Image (cartoon, rainbow, N blue to C red; front, top):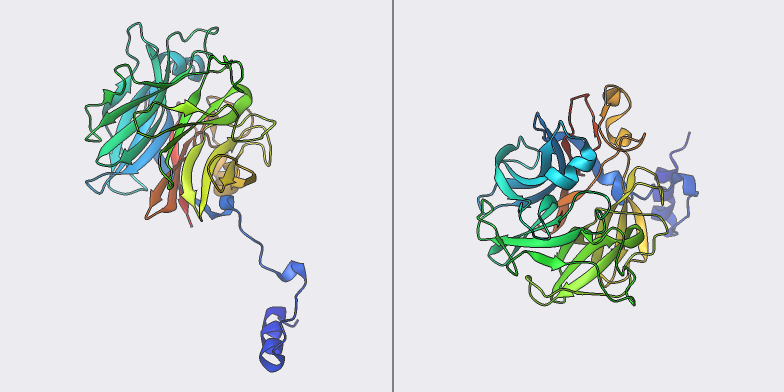
Length: 349
C-alpha cells in the first residue's frame, strides 16, 4: 500500500503543488488532556485523607507541595469541613518522593470566619514573599455550611513559615451582599481560590460560587482589597470547580474539573480567555484516571468519596520556565486499594 504522506511529499517536490490528503490521514490534533502522562503517587500518608496538593519550586530548588489533610477515620465529608488542615511536603524532584515537613495552617479554633477546616490551599510566589490562599468556615454543620465558606490569605518570607494572615484575620473574599451580583448570598459562599498575577498588572482571584460557576475578584495589591466582578467568568450550565489559573500560549487559562460531563464526565476542562475576564473557549483538560492508567492497574481501586467514576479532583499545575510541567491531583479513590486517599502526579509530555 502506498504511503500517502510520502506520496504527498514526492508530488510537492516535483510539481510545487500542495496536494490535500483526506482527513483520516491528517494527524489528529492533540488537546490539553492528551499531553498528560501518569507518573505515580505524590503524597500518601497512612492515617490521613489527603486532598489538594498545590506545587511550587522553592528558593532551595526543591519542590514544595501544600495539601489538605484530616484524620482518615473521619468520613471525607464532613471531615474536610471540620478537621482539614494544610500540610507542607518537600521533595527533591517534581516526581517525588515527598516527605511531610510541618503544618502550615489549621482552623483558628476561635470565633473567627475560619474557625474550622483550613482547606484547598493554593501556593504562589509574589515578589520575595510566598502567598498561601485557603478556604475556611465558622460552622461545619449544614446548614449554614457551605454558604459560610470564605477565602483567606496568609503570607510568609519562607515556605516553612511562619505564615501571617493578611488584614489581621486573613479574610480576602466573601459572598457579596449586593443583590445585583450573580452570587448574592451564594448558597455555597465563595471557595476554591485560584490566583493569577495578570501580565497587564494587578492580581486576579478566581473562585467557585453559586451554580458551580467561576467568578473573579481583582486587586491592585496582593493583600487586596479584592473587588468582585458582578458577573461570572464562565458560562457553564453544569457545575465545575477547583480551578487553577495560569498563562499558556498567550491565553489566560483555568483548569477545572468536569464532574458532570460538559465534555466528559469525570474529566477536566481547560477554559481559555484573551483577557482573563471572559472564558469563551474550552477543551478537555484531562481525562478520567482510566485513560492514563488502564483498567488493569485500577482493578483494586478503593472508593472513599465520590461517584462511580475514578477521577482526578482539585487539579494544580506546576509551571516551570513559564510552561505547564506537572499536574498534581487527588482522587476520591485510592488507585491501588489503600485505606485512605492519596494525591497523584502526572507529567506534561
